[in-house]
Image 1 (spheres, helix red, strand yellow):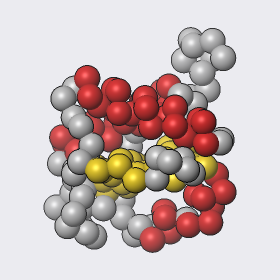
Image 2: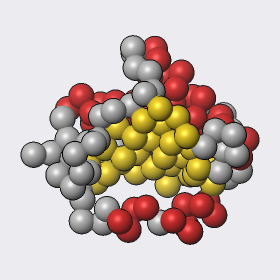
Image 3: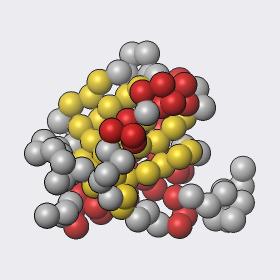
Image 4: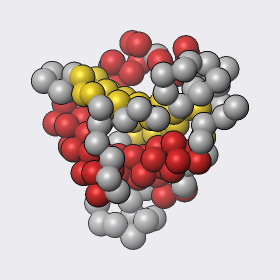
Length: 131
């Protein structure tokens, strides 16, 4: 059984919010068959701690507008790796060094990726947003 449409849609909303704050390497991994505690891991990279905080704030704000609140947050103080647990999805926002070092994607390499909208990956000038 793969991730539910609700979990996929929540991950897409979170990805769009992260993209709005210039997060890079945004991917969504369907982990529903591998673990029982969540359905999707959304991964995003920030260039530095202030950008990680901005990405996290944007994700929380966007998901709050659709009625979602995180069940748990971790890592906000240092902001090198912040985890937002929404139950169906878990959002990981990391600085590049942490993402490279821990390489979480490798742990879940056998799990399918969830297709994200093109605007998540497009440069901002292509989206019509000034840099």
